[in-house]
Image (cartoon, rainbow, N blue to C red; front, side):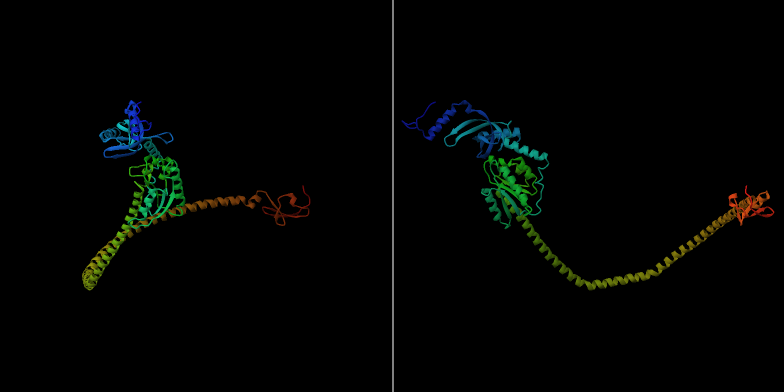
Amino acid sequence: MEVFSGQEGTNSFTLSEFSRIVAKAMSREPLLMGAWVTAEISDMTVRGGHCYMTLIEKDETGTTVARMRANIWANSFYQIRHDFIKETEKELANGMKVMFFGAATYHSSYGLSFNITRVNPVFTMGDLERIRREILATLQREGIINRNRSLTFHDPPRRIAIISSETAAGYGDFMNQLQHNSAGVEFLTMLFPAIMQGERTAQSVLDALDLVEQTSGIVPWECVVIIRGGGATTDMNGFDDLPLARRVATFPIPVIVGIGHERDRCVLDEIARVRCKTPTAAAAWLTDTAGMAWQRICDLTSRIASFASERLKGEHIRMQGIETMIPALADARIRNARLRLQNISTILPAAARDATSKERIKLEALTIALRMSSQNRIQKEYLSLKTIASTLRMAAVSRLERERSRLESLEGLTDVLNPVSTLKRGYSITRINGKTISGIKSVKPGDILETQIADGSIISTAKEFK
């Protein structure tokens, strides 16, 4: 390696001399003059046709382990951008992991950088974008991705819970914009402090959201604003977190986010009720919304007052016209009523005669019909009575014959059952004191017995029993 002496007789170099040594050493390494490098784009900007960015590499924990400045000069950027969009239908953007071809360069003023001349479109999405897409896909599968976005503001939000860092410039800009709005709208705000950068961002914001929900019973918050100012793209990683995204998507109060700059996007931007590009824009949205509501109220009030005034004027004019017209209207109504009465009195007799004549004809027809109907009914009933009389006569004769036969049978049976008939056949009836005896046990010696036979009675005294 060739060594240049900075000053005669010393071993020190000026910085520019040492930079030339480094640049010359790099130019002798073929691999540094053209190599494919896979990295993630961060902090990408385009100025004057040139594209500037930072290339980063992360380990499995998400920690950045390598970082290098890179650029695509204008003479190459147009073609690289065109080819990339054609193949992937996407713009080069922060968070994409892309395979670039380029050479390492070292500049004495700008240091080490990677000069890109080609891109491999196969690598289209970086880890950051992949994580965002996976989180959004998960929320989509769970059916909650649009839940917060579907919430409505019943009134312009004026009770605002703010989640931010108290020392952040973005919070200061937000409050300044909110407190000094041109519409003169007053807001009730409360800061729920959170860490807005680094590994603890997601959990800190989650804790703040829990506290907002716990206090909503005391203060009925109308919206939650999550804000932080701009910074490096990698500083936004904490907002691409699944538990945080799930909490925001299902939060029962509308969420407004204003995170970073206009070019920055995170998962919360896709699921919140309102997405603003910056904290100041979030404050502007709130003041504009409240201002427009207030203006609508003022306009409606003015329109109501104007309408009421015009209506009163119109009614006053109408009343004056009515007052003028009432006498003439009364005369006209009386004349019309008199004419109607005259017409009625003219046609009433004829109408009465017509009605009487029609009713007389109807009565005559009814009389004839009634007479014919009565005669037919009498004739039918007369025939029916004759039939019934004949039937009754025959039934009476038949019943008498049956009763006579039954009496004769009963008479014969009575003769058979008569005790006299039994006595005539040689039987007798013995009584003691008028009571018939049925056995020898009913008789005692000395009892007076009366024995009845067919032609008389025998009186005897009981002496001996066998």
